[in-house]
Length: 98
Image (cartoon, one colour):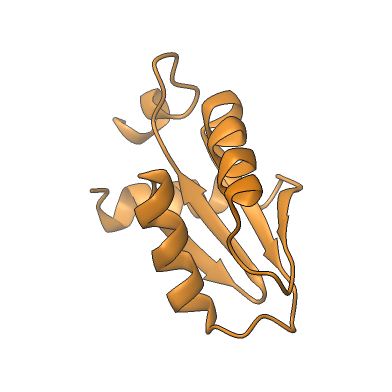
């Protein structure tokens, strides 16, 4: 888990990121889970853009993503979900420890 200061730091870092994964009307498929895992491994902090026609609420969708990908929900901003997962070669972990 991350505390509120770490969450705020990750949110500020996420503003400069572009959307890497798109969730469409078919919701969370195996392909989407694979894309999220690959991008989390490569980037550690990612933004996921969610189509407005998704049948779930964004919170339910974010909870499902975090459960399937074993990552931490950082924020839900508009129709975007920001998630974080520390990797073996962390990019942002040293920023969170300060």
